[in-house]
Length: 304
Image (cartoon, rainbow, N blue to C red; front, top):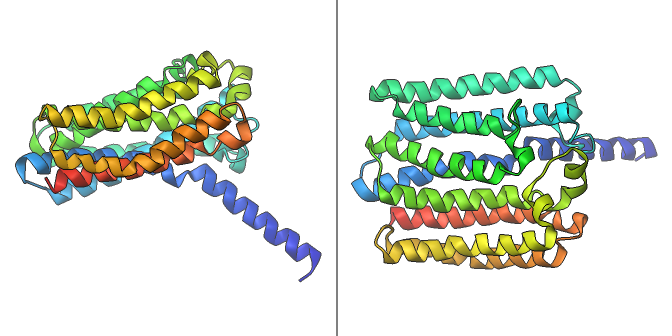
C-alpha cells in the first residue's frame, strides 16, 4: 500500500469519527428513555399498552432531538463558541443555512407525529406538553434567550426530559397523570441533567471565552465534582425513598445494579476534574449511567 493510500484511509477514518461525534448517536437515548419510562409507568399502573401511540411517539421524539442537536450547532456557530469544535455539524458542512433548515424540517416532522397521536385521541394535551418542552429546548441556546449561557441548561434539561417528556408519554397512554409518573420523571430528569453537567468539565476555557457561565465555570471544577457526586447519589436515594413511600414498586430497586457505573463516573471526575483531556470522556460515562440506570428502572416498573 502506498503512502498516499495510507494517508487517504486515515483521513477517511478521521472524517467518519468526526461525523459520528457530530451526529451524537448516544444523545438520542434522551428521546427514547423518557417515552419508554412514561409508557412503563402507565403499563405498571393500568396494564394497558397502545403500541401505535408508543412507537409514533418514539419516532417523533427522535426527530425532535435531531432538531435540537442540529439547531444548537447553528446557534453555537453564531456565538463562536464552537470555533475549536471540529465535530460541529456546521463546521463539517460549512453550510450553516442548510443545517438550520434541515433542523426545522426535523422539528416539523416530529410535530406531525405528535399531532397524529392527538388526532387519534381527540385530546391535545400531549401536543401542548411537547410544545412546552420544545420551547424550553429552544431557550437553552436559541436567541434571544440563550439561557444555557447563563448556566440554566441543567434546570431546563431536567424539566424538558423529566417532568415534560415523561408525563407526556404517560398521558398519551392513560389520559391522566399520577404521583408515580412524577416520581419517575424526577429520577429521569436528574440523570439526564447529569449528562449535560459532565459535558462542561473539559471546556471551561472555551465557555469563558464565549461568555458562557456554565455551572462548572461558576462553581469551579473541584466543587463541580462534589456536586456531581451529590446528584448521582440522589438518583439511588430518591428511588429508595419513593419506593418506601409507596410511589414506586420495590422492583425498581433493580436500579442499584448500575451502581458500579455511578462509582466509575464520580471517581473519574473527582480524579481528573481539572484535566480537560482526561475528564472529557466523563459525559460518555454519564450517558452509559443514564442508559443502564433508566433501563433497569423501566424494567422494574414493567415486571412489577
